Length: 463
Image 1: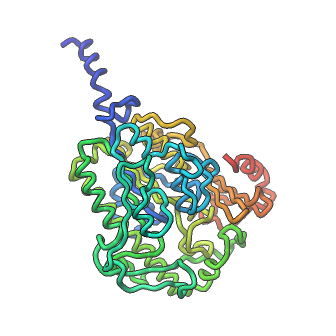
Image 2: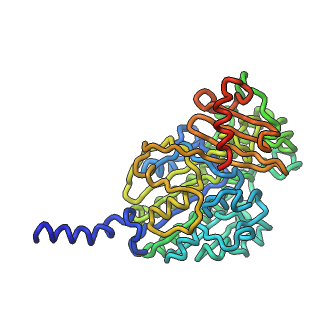
Image 3: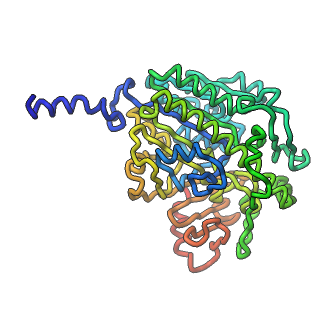
């Protein structure tokens, strides 16, 4: 065959050989998407430099993917965050600012991330918690997560055995928070074990068709329930509670919100702080184990080289930093969350990127990688350049917001700075220099030498 004919053949077959580089790829060669979400998971994992937290399976995924070291959610609470990254729209657009409103109520015709895939020939499934579901457990089990989005949608609950064990409410029952249970039974006596089991079954059933499989693990969200063996991995005397720096400035009260939770946290003894850490880490390792089961099945079924794997926490979490043991702040601990993406061809495997990115970008990124045409109006951008070269230049800020009653907090995170305004600055302003203050303990907003930087950041605090 002449060289000219070889060139013709190569042009014809290249789109089939390299589907990630073919925007118009046919559904038959489009990669699957395994989209894993952990609830309330902060960046304390082995692959993020915290070996004391046992996460060998998430670490394994990071070793074959790209770890985003500075990925930020747009609202650090479950429903607003998920509503944002599953629609590719900012919270101001979805108008979902708490856990009580479903995104379809405000945007009935919005095309969600899984819906985009469903409408393009993919089998789509929601297992566990993907969109935030409200109501009683019975109501959650009866309702479809979002009918337009899913071919299959399932929610789970613990068995009777899984609800027994040793535990307590650390507020003495005064609040419906800070509850833990070292449960009897095994993994599948808990919802997350059942989620992993069914994820494996669906991959076995759908392995010859393109799928978007969303696997939503509930832990380490409160109540901190996991089989007892995971608690045993973290002896109380091995845990070291966070110590606030002596030179910190006083936090604005609105920064964490105060209230009954803050009062309860202030009363924690050192032993109770260790107790809280143990149950949170137990939930983290329990989730990691379930992730491992799903990844093992992906490899056993020879789907790893056909599947884009995304792993995220829906937002971060405080474990005593700034006196807080929860989420819903615009501090780094709450706004930043894990994000790992592994491509079928192993591109950039084991690398990390320091780029400041938004979860909002997940939607356009997956559309770009799979060649599926995205809906108009997405407010994020594709992160494909960072996946192809994690060291590539990337100069885009990340935006996070919260609501405290009628008071709005808005924050912009750049490579060096975090700038936060409350009620357009009328209720307070915060400025943190991440070159010297990674924990955001020294608010330098009132220091005149930062006036020029303040003015610049004030001009971009709203996207």
